[in-house]
Every structure is written in structure tokens, then in C-alpha cells.
Image 1 (cartoon, one colour):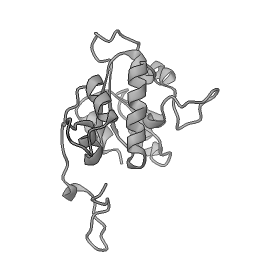
Image 2 (cartoon, helix red, strand yellow):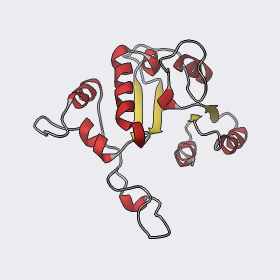
Image 3 (cartoon, one colour):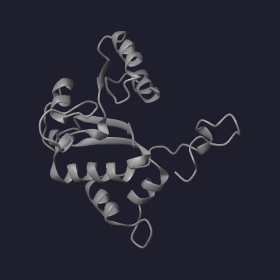
Length: 181
């Protein structure tokens, strides 16, 4: 836990960390207190941003308006520089649903996209990456999701991590994350 946050902090980046697991909050908050404003920790879940409910939003769900106010980010025209860079790990259980939600928000200029262009740096499964980057003729992978993401975004593979890097199950030496995912 926290490897992504620590890597960004070590690179000298100002980080607003959304943490959806309340068990991890105390460690992150103590790190926040020791860093002179380089880190802001918020109890929230980026993938539960702007839920389709009326009234008060219960954490870890977060409203982008409140989040961007807290971060001090103002809306800019789409031709301006990218006001926010998002780094995250797509939850594998609802990976496809999250990709669709981000896509709908992009085309509607809602949620985080109300503030201008956003750079998404997302860790995702190889399966979903292949769908997003498929070419016409790749029958199983090329679909509506592919076309819409490719029209709206520049998709680049920044890094592919080998399965051998993932934590293994010490009992039998096998992978803790099944290869099929």
C-alpha cells in the first residue's frame, strides 16, 4: 500500500491522494503531516467520483467539485495545459464498468473533465488494454469501447509489468493474482 503515492512524492510531485480504505488512512495522514504540503490525503475513491445520487454523498464516494476546490484547481479551456494528472489502479472487479464511466464523463464533459483535459495514467489489466488499443479486424477485442476511447484519447502503453513482479502465495509459490486476470 502506498507505493504509487511514495513514488510520486519521491519524484517531487505535489500529490492529492484519494484513499478508499480507511485502514490505510492513519499511515497516509502521518506521512501527510511530515511533508510540508506536498501531500494532501482525502478519504475517497476516485472510481466512485460523482455518483448518480441526489443529496449528500457518503465517503468514500466523492464529488469532483468538492475535490477540485480542495485541490485549488480551477477550470481551464480544453486548449490549455492539462490541469490535473490522475494516477490510479483500476479495480479489476469492475474494470470495464469504470472504463465506461470515465468515457461517458469525457464525452459529456462532466466530472473531472469539467475542468479541462485530464491526463489519466491508469494501471489496468492486459485484457482491457488490448481492448482499448485493438485495431479493426481484431474480432474479439475491437468493439464500441475501443472506438470511443481511441477517438477521444491518445492511448499509450507506458510500462508493462511482468507477472513475476507480483506477490506470490508463500504456501505453494504460485501467483497471488491469477494469470487470467
